Length: 92
Image (cartoon, rainbow, N blue to C red; front, side):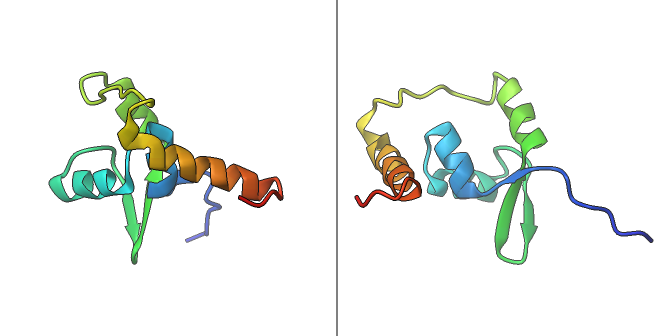
């Protein structure tokens, strides 16, 4: 059997949480309850195939839009801002 290069992009739970403006805890609960997009578990690493994420997003019955101005999501936006500053070489 010939080894194949992995070309399908995957997202980590943290990246998906940032994409959807939810917490990683929410994704963890969805996995436990069998909700949300399909995922892969390799040891202790969870990865979401981009195709499964987009399929889940296309199913409008599954997704609820959130208001990112909601104060519950401030911590996620704050983490994102800090990360952007770090990537640009700026201290927080």
